[in-house]
Length: 317
Image 1: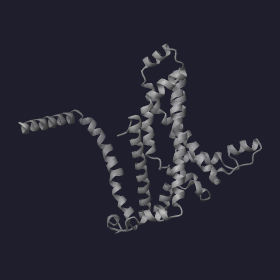
Image 2 (image 1 turned 90 degrees about the vertical axis):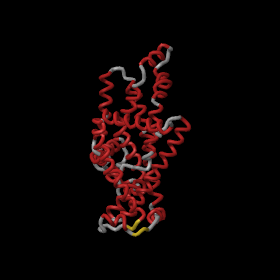
Image 3 (image 1 turned 120 degrees about the vertical axis):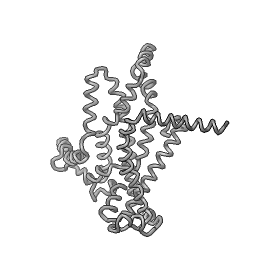
Image 4 (image 1 turned 180 degrees about the vertical axis):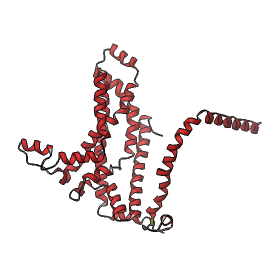
């Protein structure tokens, strides 16, 4: 009897699976290109991480990646013994940390503020105007930054000269790189990053607003006791996902803005990997440092997810 029940259950599951596959066949066809993309460009290249444990030399062919001499943790030890290791880790962490501290709350505050605008045309105009910087190319943004901060004819130094302050060569002073990077990044992305928070706020039932107004709640109380608690799960999930890339700094922007005089604060792991791999042809060392960076990111998001699950019952998995 038990075997018959097991067979029946399996047959029912098989029929249900076939039925669902037939029902969703067009949706499955639509997702196939996405699966192929991630397989080809994300998962297959991961096999090349074996270079981090081998002595790979350029020109040995594709097979050389997997048949090169095994050196174990040599490249990892070499990185930590390097005089640049602490500087790279410190700069990468501080740039990401300051970007998180200043860049993460701003979209939330902006979403709360823009959804309180009663005139729809004004609300839409404000939203669209703040979305636009996100679609400006990183190269263009960096060009704008360099031109605005030029010591000779930059608009910032022209304003400083008018109030009696001497011109400052911002792009050659190490202490200015982090504020420039963080503030420009926040300006460029806060509007676009607020979209998901605006959508979460729009999903709050209007009846809840009405009931709080009937009870005599003012706008500040509505935001503090209804809006923010309602979007709390969204904030936590996005925070965890952001922490997963804490040690990833935008390579293009750093590469376009940094220079040898400001390496002390601008040189990050991504630029070091570029110099080791592309300029010095040391792909094994670059792979090892990149793998180490990914492991740190995974550890951070894993710990953050566990802590969030224990403290708030909200987590990604």
